[in-house]
Every structure is written in C-alpha cells, then in structure tokens.
Amino acid sequence: MTDLRPLKDLRKVASGLVIASFSIAALLGIAVLLGAGSFGETEGRVLLTTLIVGVESIAVLCYLSVVGHRFAFLGAVGVLVSFVATGLALWITWGGSSATSVWQGFGISLTIAASLAQMCLLLATAGRTRVSPPLWATLAAITVVAVMVILPILEVDGLGDTYWRAFGVVAILDVLGTVVLTAIGVFGKRDHSGQPIGPASLQLGEAVATRVSSTAMTMGLSADELISRALEAYEAANNASDKADFPPSGTSDL
Image (cartoon, rainbow, N blue to C red; front, side, top):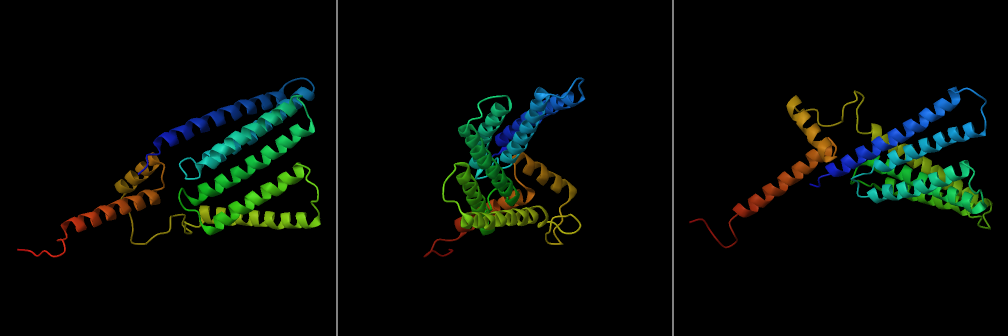
C-alpha cells in the first residue's frame, strides 16, 4: 500500500495556511467596516480584497481535496491557475492596468480555476480510484462549458443563437451531473439511520473499529478502502500459499 501520510501532512499545512490567510483578510475587512470615518475607495478595495482572498481560499481547499487521488495533478494545476486569477483580480482592484488583455486573462484564468475546483470536488466525493461513466460524462461537460465560456471572452466571432443554445444544454447537463453525483457520493452510501450500508450481520467490536479507523486515517484512506485492500492482500497471500503447497503436475505422494 502507498503511504499517504506525507501527502496528508502537506494537506494539513496547506489547509492551515489557507485558513490563516483568510482569517487575517477577514479581520481586516471587519476592521474597515467597524472603523471610524467615512467609507471611501480604499475601504471598498480592502473589502473586495477580503472577498478575493476568501474565494481563493475556498478554491484551494477544493484542490486539496484530491491529494492522494490518481488525478491529483488537476488540483496542482488548479492551484497555479487560481493564483494567476487571484493576482490579476488584486492587480485590477488596487489600480493596476485594466486593459482588455488583463480582463481577458482574468476571465480565462477564473473560468479554468473554477472548473478545476468543481472537478476536484466531484473526484474527491467519488473516491480515490473510482471514476464511473457518469463522472466521466460530467467532467467532460465541465470541460466543454469552460471552453464555451472562454471563447466569448476571447471575442471569437460567429457565436450565434445555435452556439448559446448548445451552451445552455451542456451547462444544464453539467449542473445535473454535479448535483446527482454529489448527492450519491454524500448520501448514497448511508441508510436512514445515518450508518454506512452493509450486511446486517457484519459488526466490528469497538476496539477493532477504532483500530481500523485510526489506521485508515493515518494512511489517508476510508475504512472501506483499507479493509478492501487488506482483504485483497490476504487473498493474494493465501492463493500464493495454496500454489506453493500444491504438488507439481506428474508427482504423487509417497
């Protein structure tokens, strides 16, 4: 089994930094609102900066949700793109160049960053290894929507009524897939009592359940994934042992 503890530690550190940075921005925003004096342009920029940092913090948490996943590279790309979008947003907010190219860069990077955040959340909800056909279809819809948003930002000509009708259809499929997969991922594995669905006769003792939970958390796995891998390893070892004990063809016991 792959040891995911270093990745979990990295995620904890990154999450702490995200929370700390947004906490500081939030305190600055509160100080502006409660401070004496008139509410002017500078105060408005501080509040807008707080909003920008907050959105970036949420996005980074989305990207961190796929740490240890086989598609973790999407989170890494998302972090880089979101930094570009955040940097451009802060640049525009604090009086930097507002040329068309800057706004286009901001719009494109924001679209890509938001799409990758959505993908990361869906992948994290589905699990580290399982990518079902409906999930693939939803990821494809997210990609198409992002491309169809970027084209108008680039001021591509010839985007008529048919284009926007097609965009609406794909966007609806995007939202539908996201809602359904999230609902299944969050609620589909639990019964009405809030307990994971499984054979009624399968019950773990408190000590064993605690041990499984602790080991799964250490390795960055769910309890189901840990037990499944342990069973696979046991079956593989058992099969290997049976083959080693089985007499070779053409021999007999003396």
